[in-house]
Structure formats: structure tokens, C-alpha cells
Length: 118
Image: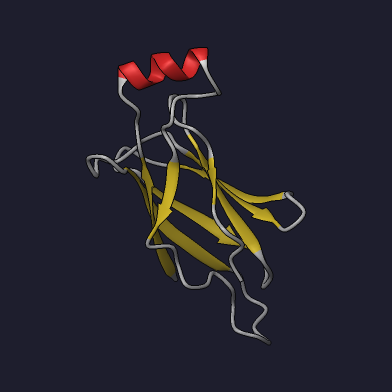
């Protein structure tokens, strides 16, 4: 069993207004912090693992309930998904050894995808 913490940063209103007239969504990145070293099963092991983690607001460490957390293959196919509970906690089944991305999104936050997890 592995654990991870995902942090979110919510932009202030002034910045959100300036972003609406400028580039894209408010800068409310769902940033991955304390990413797991690996979510893969050991070579030769065929059983699935579960990744447990927490989604937190990066500015104040408050849990972000209702965040959608997905495990994506290198080609972008979703293989597992979870919704963060009231404490921001989630659990994802890892179907098999491989390379994956962790993708997190929540209304009011900019979606974030982790680096490739091997």
C-alpha cells in the first residue's frame, strides 16, 4: 500500500479576474506534493495494489472534498478513478505493473497531472 498527498492552490479574486481577461482558468493548480516514489507492484507480482492519498489545498492545507482523482496510462486511458471524501482522502486500484499518471481535478481548481510514475 502506498500513500500520496495532493495539494491544491486556490487563486485570490483579483487574480481570478485578471486571468479571465487574460489567459485561462484562475491559477488554482492542483499540485502534486510528496508524490509516491512508485505505485507499481514489484516485478513478477501479478496482484493489484491500492494507492491511498489526500487532496489538500496548497495554500492552507485544508482537505479538498469531491476532487476527482484518476490513474491514467501513458496513452491517457483511465484505468482507475476515485472521488476524494470529506477529508480529501482517496484510494485507487492499480490494475497491473506499468507506468501511470495521476490526474486530479475539482471545480474551481485548475486540473493537474503528475509526472510519469514508474
